[in-house]
Amino acid sequence: MSTTISLQVPQTRTAPRFAAPLGELFAAAIALFNHPGTPAPRYPSREAARVRAMARSYESADPRFASELYAAADRHEMLYGD
Image (cartoon, helix red, strand yellow):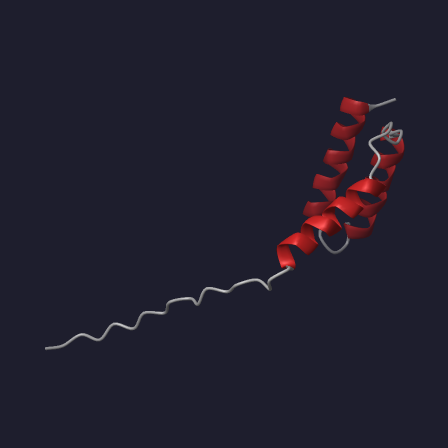
């Protein structure tokens, strides 16, 4: 009696020679444009209204998901309300 075992060994891939330095340079360039300033103002009632509008669009297709969206909007407004 004999048993045959097939092993699949993934080949190691190497990145091109200058991929890492170019990636670091690109990340540094993006970081220059991301100025950590004051965060954008939040409007919880508007955010909740958008979620409720999305829930209305799902009411006929997926009522359970719509009810979860309504509940999430209510919780969001209670936690972060104006």
